[in-house]
Image (tube, rainbow, N blue to C red; front, top):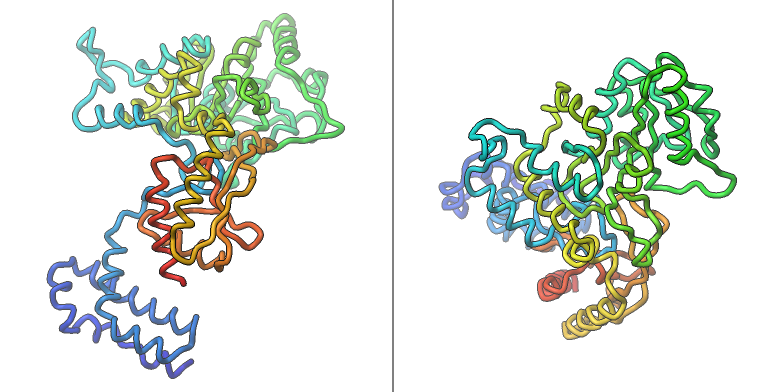
Length: 469
């Protein structure tokens, strides 16, 4: 193998190749240099994988084309459209919620020119960016006021910084969750300046645990919805109604009214149990049952852009707007325009189910899924050498939401091919396709494949198949 490595050309030699004169003249030098180095690295990888002199010699003959290929890879967008064939509806690694076409139109309208982001058109003076969303959140959730920051972790941090900086926040040990990327509620609380006061145990927390922990340093009670896991068996927790009684009793005793804060995470605004999904607490229910402040995500079950929405009592939210953290965590016009449009669909819950892609995928009828699976299967079987059939599979909600929900779905299975090679080749296509590998076969769950993506998907499969066969 060492003798093959000695056949690799020096970087300076490749940079000076006459065959690359045109590319060198029309490409910024840093890009050209990186393309050359990447091409040589690709040859080095070829040696490691195959240790084949004939294969290396053939690749060396095509070195100018290889440099050109790597130049194109360097200037191509890194963030690109992907076809999600995994069946995970809120796939965090693939961008979570898919947006409705109307949301994209709203985004285009405010991004192609100027907008009244912080300008009050009625008064002809400076306004607030949050005003565009407040009324919709009020109508949908029943909250007195609302504001939006860049994600739900930021929302929790801002709430705690405003309500409890330097003071204690009482939280059940069973609710000290970790979300994606190793972000933990205790860590977020620490960064906010609040002091965590844990009560209860992992599996059981009682109202008396909260009562025993109350003291003059207590600033708030925090309830966290454990949306990304379930503890089953010998368990109990404290319901909202009991927390309200604990708060009210403390106010009668001390004259201090403690805010009840709830991190709902997933951001459910419609009762999904009506559509066969597990019951998930809605924002409306949390506020109606006495929570003063509720935070939730925009890009999970709500089906909108990444955002952290804070809804609740007007006096607390007014204080949050004055917090210096607010400017660091604020959202831009793009998020506001898409979120405003998405929230408008919730004014009629039936419209939200039909129009918001996340909700539509989660509630799609079996007949519709079956039809799309059969159509995709027929298209793939028309590719020379491929064998496809339709099989049962379970989709997942994803995004840390409804972890116990298995959604019966249908997948197109490709068999008789090397699943690992095909899976990799599909990821390397101009429109990457991300699939599931199961039972040594490639599976494409059609729940997360839009009808308009079938033709492109087939083109990508054909190209990947030709590359590895």
